[in-house]
Length: 414
Image (cartoon, rainbow, N blue to C red; front, side):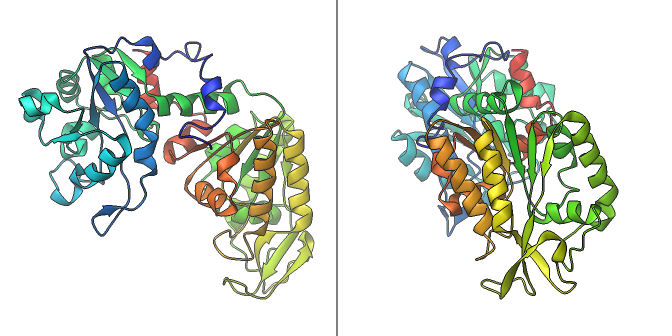
């Protein structure tokens, strides 16, 4: 991606948003208003410092837009899992330096709701306000109506820019929208637009790449995708389960043998829906799971009893590349092999770079998400050229599974 919203997303966001049923910052009069902005700045901390500021950097367009249009942002965020109690080690104070550096503005931490309701003159004069960890309050995760109303009383407009928390029905992600004029922030807008382009009204043919360790963790995802995409590549440990379900030997590979009936049901559903499932045609096997372990490339039906399948082979990569060439839209979730260690990252790297090349030339709309996915695409050097990469994790997966997200549904009703 060339900017925090993805290099093709700004053009995409100029149309279709109202059709999807939610408002954006463009629909709101922000001058002189305090805007309550739900953000996700739950960033990793190492030795008391933010070690990865990606999530902070991604909220910058929304905050700057509000400031430039005369509004005052009050950021609402969670940090860790304090479970409704004040936990000093989970204070948002630790992110203040990184937040101020990213925004280029002063940020004042408001430590309590009482303090937010009775702002000092210094706080009123601050460029940006940051409410202390919202999960310090038990009413947040229980979505207590009274708590949501109290939050709403802090501002004039509600802006949700935390798609990564939109699958949670919490007071600050869903309940508050019932009390204020509400809209999506720029990051939320980009996420929703990208996903709508990928699964809602996509340019066909649509190809999905789904990898990872276990079929059991992605049943809903696979069940939804086979009804919506034209072809589905299955890789990683999941592919072993599908191969075993077809009667092939997978040796000592990671495999959920008890999921074989389910795998066959998914393949049958795909056939009924006209979705082509693409499994490995050749495999890379080794006797130990270690970097640069002795390995060999074999036909998919020749896995030795004492070996593990750790990657897809070159014929499989060629098949994936052909599928990418045929596709107009690509959805990617999960690696094709054990991408963490060489040389078992080869298939993932090659396929990802091929998709990146087609995306860079504008021939492919590519949307990717999920923890391992982001890491794998970054490792392959392909992330920069994908149309959009979501860092939302669980929310991204639930959207792909076809589930309604409370934080998004709340904006529809606003």
